[in-house]
Amino acid sequence: MDKKLKDLLDKDNCFFIHYASDGFYNGMIPAPRISCISIYNNGMDKRINFSIDNFIQGHSVKDAEKMLLYDFKSFIELRPDISFIHWNMNGDGFGFKAIWARAKELEIKLPEIKDENLFDLSSYIAYISEKRLSIKQILWFNSLLDRGYLDGKDEALYFSQNKFREISASVSLKVVGLYYVVEELKKGTLKNEKVFAGPNDGLTKEERRQQALKIEEAREQMINDMVNHNKKILKRKEEAFEDFVENYEPEVEEEHSLLFFDFGHPVISLFANWFANK
Image (cartoon, rainbow, N blue to C red; front, side, top):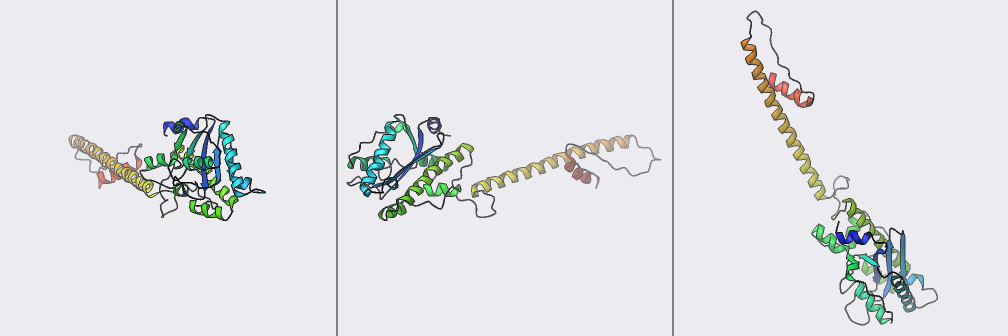
């Protein structure tokens, strides 16, 4: 596992984070409106949703959005050493820049998070799998995709329909899903492609290919062992025959059959003796 990721996971104030908004940030004003920021810490068994859904009762959407951002600000300020593991939130159009820009527009100054306290899980997985994957793909490939999952465009659409509870549930599923992705990384069982469509053995095409190679190697080794064992049997037969000729007595006319059995290789011995005495 990446050393920085491992070090962050060992920290008490390390959280997985994801969020939803009503669009992508293009550097212009206004920045996309924030509907939910979800964070999760497994050590504390703590999942927190800073969501419009928490404050919408009796308030306008804008006021509820300001309240969630104030709550988020207070949470960070109480933890100066806070760190975040995220999925592709370090770009210009989506992520921390968009959240901080929207907060500034609403006259909320969020504390800056140092780069050393941020870890982009999507870039790390792209590095080890040699391809860029979406959060939906990595959750799907590892059977972590829940029915409450919403794509980003659906979360933006739901914002316009005031379906903030559904958005909050979706973001919460994603952030906990990221934790389980890291758990699969720890165990070395993370899948980065669709499970093979053949027998339901849970293997991907690459894993099935590796399995087939191991089976072929084992088969070749077995054949080589059998050939080498037969050579030893034939050599012993020749030596025994030479000894038999030297000590041959004419009055003995019974047929001689040679039997050699190695208890360490019973199956190979059976094949070898059949071959040696045919």
